[in-house]
Length: 92
Image (cartoon, rainbow, N blue to C red):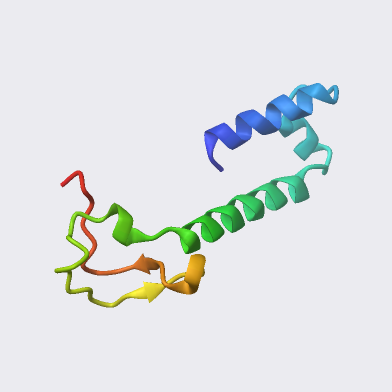
């Protein structure tokens, strides 16, 4: 699990009087918490990426781009590109 997530779990555990998240795990408490947090983060990232538009972040010029293997997301108008094999980051 990500180190920052573990730190957050430890902080929250300490707020409730436990030494660490590992102490809760040893008592059999907390397994569901870690699973729920992980699922929530995955859902958040998946939803965020479905609303991004790679064309806004791409080095290629929109008017001259020849997109390959496009997948559209569910952003405004459902016309946002979330995958394209022609995508190039602007930093390159």
